[in-house]
Length: 415
Image 1 (cartoon, rainbow, N blue to C red):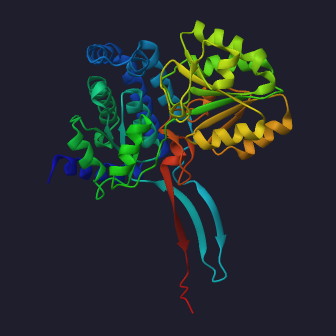
Image 2 (tube, rainbow, N blue to C red; image 1 turned 45 degrees about the vertical axis):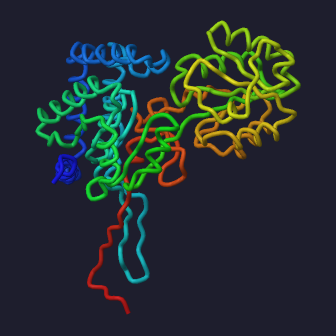
């Protein structure tokens, strides 16, 4: 039996035990995990400094290093996220529906854990904590495999969480980290169908596509974010400017940052020069189609490849369109089904956009940066699902459950 298979067996045993735990015991453990993170801040930051130094040595771009960086504030945020998960309703045992059949059978459909969840992700150590907390709340064991860029951070974070579980008299194998970051081990994890019930990848579009193509374990796909903001002819341009700058600049390396701006031609001449100046003031490279470049000659010409690209960097591309219908058509052609936003004061335009755009989350007059489990009130986030089965959008504890039917009879037999 391989080390991974042994890990899978331990996870299955832990998952069975977790399924029997009451809400209070789970919540006490989550509180201990949250406190342990804060108490171990120095150790965590010391390990993270090693990862940051290695990343810089390997020439990783600055926007991606931001994903990797842990600070006392970010560790506090992770700790607060676990406390928020603790305060959420326990999804396990929740009755979705119930009825009595003509044969007199009493049927209820109840929420149960998925079992063992595999998380495979790139350079974001906060995923280690978010995934562990949400999986645990929903009664699942988790096997974590982070990227090599964050290995030192992930090791100390997982050890901290496991120690807190042990102190809570709970099987620490509810949270396990694969510390071998080789591609071969990742591939073996993706084939661990006897032990892992579902695999959730998080990372770049290229990374997720690789996992989807190679995995034998069932996948919940968390997609890349080629997110658009459409500025309608009836937009409040002050709102539009503020929203676009927030959506692009706050954290350009994350999947909910804006990568494209689509402008209605009626406001393009007035708005684009202001937008360009504001973006350049924030060190954002602006690319655009021929109409955008005609308005602002310093714009870099966009290629066909640009429209489908998630930059994860200080780059944005601008498209000028004739009407709302053209904006919707363009966005639906190139988006990744993640998050899209319209800026408009026209109610009917807003409703048409929200109804016709094919994405997990659609906004009116708000930044795409809100597509986040914590911002949605889920405490933390396992990922943003861009598929339509079995979950869509930000995934919290409830999305880490499935259902089973409990049927109570009194001697009935089928005639």
